[in-house]
Image 1 (cartoon, rainbow, N blue to C red):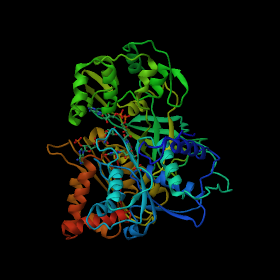
Image 2 (cartoon, rainbow, N blue to C red; image 1 turned 180 degrees about the vertical axis):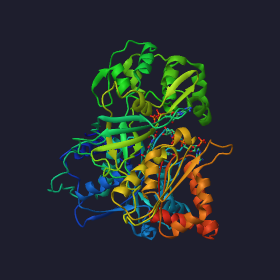
Image 3 (cartoon, rainbow, N blue to C red; image 1 turned 90 degrees about the horizontal axis):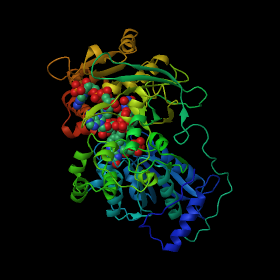
Image 4 (cartoon, protein in one colour; image 1 turned 30 degrees about the vertical axis):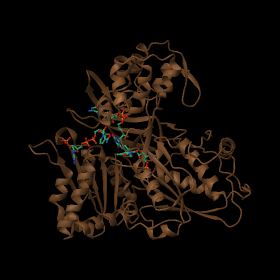
Length: 577
Ligand SMILES: Cc1cc2nc3c(=O)[nH]c(=O)nc-3n(C[C@H](O)[C@H](O)[C@H](O)COP(=O)(O)OP(=O)(O)OC[C@H]3O[C@@H](n4cnc5c(N)ncnc54)[C@H](O)[C@@H]3O)c2cc1C
Ligand SMILES: NC(=O)c1ccc[n+]([C@@H]2O[C@H](COP(=O)([O-])OP(=O)(O)OC[C@H]3O[C@@H](n4cnc5c(N)ncnc54)[C@H](OP(=O)(O)O)[C@@H]3O)[C@@H](O)[C@H]2O)c1
Ligand SMILES: Cc1cc2nc3c(=O)[nH]c(=O)nc-3n(C[C@H](O)[C@H](O)[C@H](O)COP(=O)(O)O)c2cc1C
């Protein structure tokens, strides 16, 4: 697929140069095309990435492949292991980073980021750089980490060779724009930009994010007993797909929106439903477009601003005029598109204008809960089903309710493998493993345990799991107990948060066994966390610091350095969401 290249408005070109360059870049990105090659000695380029769940890493590798087609000497570097003393000697640095938590760097970027922001960072006059910042506008601090790298390098006197591009969830088009822009900027103006004769990379074949696989559903079962929670074990067939995965990867799932909500939206629109363009340019019915292609879920500032421009709602007018972040957040919380349609009618001319303000429906990621060695040809997920009631309406998460409720009548779910090298079992099977995964955080650890069992890995395994009630929420109880019985699990610590008066969480159990946990770490164990990012993962991190300080007799600074070294050594990995 080729995207027309739009150059950023602040790119330093005249209108004529801009038009020519856009056209040129669009053409060179076409399948079968070549990357322009500066003449003379190969141009050194370091591609430095920081990724929490693999997207930035995937793009960095793709960029390296493109650079190798031209006269460049590209080098791939992970921020986790990057030797920062190199920075002052780099010539061309291309940074690709995501943002995590509440506007924080990914784990692998934390150290480099902190150092670069500090007074210890050197002047970088001889460095040329550009940043691709991955993020999601549904988070308040959109692309904050990439923005900080970009502005800090500029303040250290490095030269921006191409403007930063900020990515809102879907990287395809912005990545194409940015990579073409930086490659063009890396070619000296007097170079002949001669294409090399080597064959161009063939167009992507097989199943992928842009060509998802329709996977037959083998099993769809609620793992919870009667109670508030609903968590589904979903087994999908990968037969005839050629899709392969490793434990630690995630599966991307394209959901369909609920037809009943779509019908309610259409019934309340002021115009006659007609054909509309889908995001891929094809013409489909409005109903089809709203079920398959457009996001009718949660609201954000951008859609409210666009809606307000078409609506006479005094409330929306004052909300937009105030431009207050908290007021936007308060309004958006618990509301969806249907609330705008019904409560704040808007005067769209036609269906096409209406869909033009909607965002593309995005796939959701799920940590893979199976080992391919234990279940060849299958992939299993452990999905928490999101249901809640707000403003008098029963609502559901789009993808989790699609998987729980709408699979039978819909076509098979379309899926792809999202590789994540930042969440991998130790390469040495004799290494001990400590896993902390409450709630759906159990998913990758079921896969780890299956893998460690089928490979007869010698290292010990210790799992911390938690959920509200033992009676109803002990996910994979039989499997975990049999892992205990056959010795795969050396220890299983269970935190039932609501089975007693005081909350009991996984980190409380870690602290209770702090001496032993410290001993495991001292013997080389790797430490993994999966599940809720906003509270649990932070509290577990604090508990780990406390254990290092109490049982390792480390000062706060030494404990922090110990944790940071664990991350660098890839012995502390997190898959949190
Ligand atoms: C790398 C990664 C791995 C993941 N692995 C797993 C996994 O193994 N298992 C799993 O279950 N999930 C996992 N997730 C989360 C998953 O991707 C989805 O985010 C989750 O299933 C919710 O998606 P949804 O489409 O059902 O809900 P959405 O339609 O996206 O709705 C979620 C939104 O609903 C709103 N909402 C939810 N509850 C309430 C409430 N009580 N009141 C008001 N508003 C509310 C919030 O705005 C929330 O953001 C993972 C995420 C990532 C990034
Ligand atoms: N950021 C996100 O969007 C996000 C994050 C996590 C989960 N989810 C979604 O929410 C749904 C259910 O999630 P889930 O099954 O993974 O369960 P969960 O809500 O993460 O809860 C699992 C267990 O963790 C406990 N817990 C709560 N706060 C904690 C803390 N600070 N430290 C340690 N443990 C804590 C809970 O206890 P109590 O409930 O009793 O307090 C419960 O026993 C899923 O759809 C999932 O995708 C979304
Ligand atoms: C738990 C969580 C927190 C996130 N926080 C932010 C954020 O604060 N700002 C932002 O712009 N994007 C945020 N994102 C979106 C990611 O940056 C985005 O999905 C990115 O493509 C992930 O790239 P990676 O796979 O390379 O880590 C967050 C995503 C998750 C799952």
